[in-house]
Image (cartoon, rainbow over all chains, first blue to last red; front, side):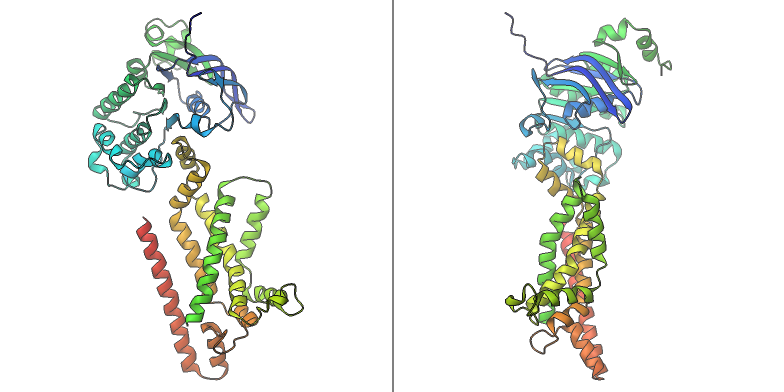
Length: 242
Length: 205
């Protein structure tokens, strides 16, 4: 018998509702371990909601999420939740220095390694701001600090919500190189973006979500080059599909 | 003057130790009866000190349930009364301070691997300016109140006389110069204590 490892996440029969409104409906989705899944789609497609379910911050109204082949319990036990982290679309800084923000995830794990922050900040072009108050940074700087803060804990699973949305091209390149590092370390990544180019550059496979439903999923190259669905073709062509 | 600081300082300490955790729990969690607790705390913020004094007096008087402790007309009774006045102030203002922290920050802190306790502590730290305001407000409330300490302390010279009750007495006796001087001391005390708290808050940044 072959011993294929179970996927990092396997979602089955997911329906997630806020009140009467169904915001996410995913019959089946597997995210293989060590791979990067791109999630593309227009605003309001349920992309961020999916990340909240994967992080365990919310429990799906219906359906199951398996992590490494076992159902995700709720509340999520600390050892499991500590293997997963999210860089949120609107990252919020603690009212401390940039360095202390980056070290926060280590601090709560009882690791007091103050030197851990600077190499990460260096790679993201932020080391000169290490002692600055994090709340005083610009939006693009905060986004990069949030990425460094997540990467400092070396998670098994990294959930990224529009990690390069507010960045200039030079910093997009820095952030993407940073994400590639994580990929080469075997981190499972779920990358939410409405930038289809970014998904194309980074994701092994891609899902198109529209209005909470999966329109199409498949290997990134195939999905972009020969979409099976008319709505996928229209979305990639930038036509209004919702 | 030292009795004034001892009584109000101890009352503030007790009210802070009890009120900050309660305010944090009410502000950060949802549980049945939370609305009622909030209502009670907000009402407690406006408790007339003289009514608190009356109730504490009845509790501690010979025929009251705690009469055997023999605390009436002692500084201990004054501490009890002032703690009851300060506690809802500290708790309610702590509650609104932690509620003022962006709820998304709590999710982000949790997603970075913080336990529930670590998350609560982190949010309290984020709310430290509001916390300082809560403690300053409570201190201002009790160091300047006269009704409760007068009733339960009895304004006994050398034993339970504090600045506010001394001011009342000297005014009644027509010694306005002494009353004014004591009033000035009280103002300076409040000023000094608030300056010290603000200083602490600045260092916490």
